[in-house]
Image (cartoon, rainbow, N blue to C red):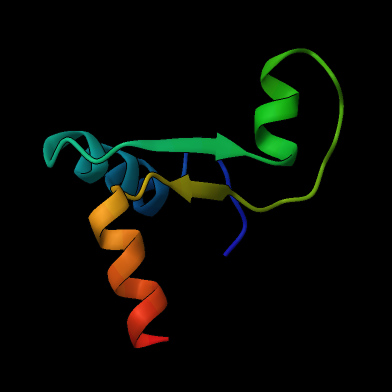
Length: 62
């Protein structure tokens, strides 16, 4: 799904992240565009913060 700042699904996703106090970063082309550089990739890249314990569990379970 491409990212459009008027897209209700994307806005709902970001609102849900905030509602549940999820820590995340918007990265990639959309983040670059925020700083007045033109990079049109058409998608929204999100990096989710993992807690150390959660990251260890993910490594153990593959």
